[in-house]
Length: 292
Image 1 (cartoon, rainbow, N blue to C red):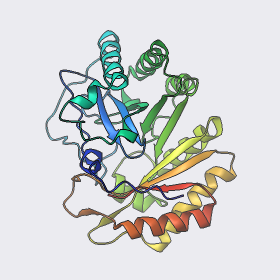
Image 2 (image 1 turned 90 degrees about the vertical axis):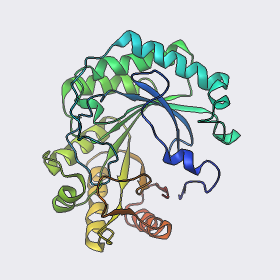
Image 3 (image 1 turned 30 degrees about the horizontal axis):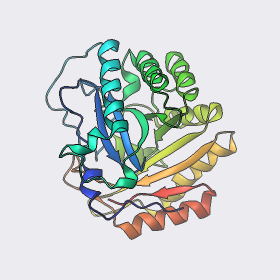
């Protein structure tokens, strides 16, 4: 299955994911190409804390900030206001969202994401509970709770308990896997977390509940991932499934916003589509492709 991003008046909105919205601290709505509608983002990483340093990341981490505890009451108010703004249609009256096509003016999910790795925040479980409670308050039975994560912390017991709450609220885990080999992982994600830990966490989590693999491939100094790297990546996906993991689908995308490094560029649409076709053939999985 190929689901390329629309070439329409909505394209600039897909590219714009500002974390600031009105006077909010945590909550920001975005038009998400992968959600195919409005996603209400929850940014726990106000200090921009992340244990990855991806070459394509657009977050500026040059200015130091202090860690902050979660204010659950404020998060609840911001969630209520954002949900009401989307469901009432008020969001689409302002200049930021007035050009969103009618078919995309729907609330698809509440996503824990933001300027860093959300599971690093000590109050992550409380944030998941707050999102689940907001979903219940507003009767949003068709709205998913989504965790967008690099999978580095999924082995920790408090995180696993929070994932149980997520799953009970039509939850989805969108977990990053940008490489098939240790060397390419170090090149792309520049993390001190062992690659094997990421793979183990993906596998163990996928045994507990179906996950979405989110993968970004890019051109690095003019070169996309090699045939050998793609073969290794496909093997990692097969390994997860062969050992009992459930992969709901693979989201395959490329750079859509200005990356951290000037030598990183998006892959061409036809390159992303070709990789998607290859992965479908080699793994039998559902692979959705998203263009820059």
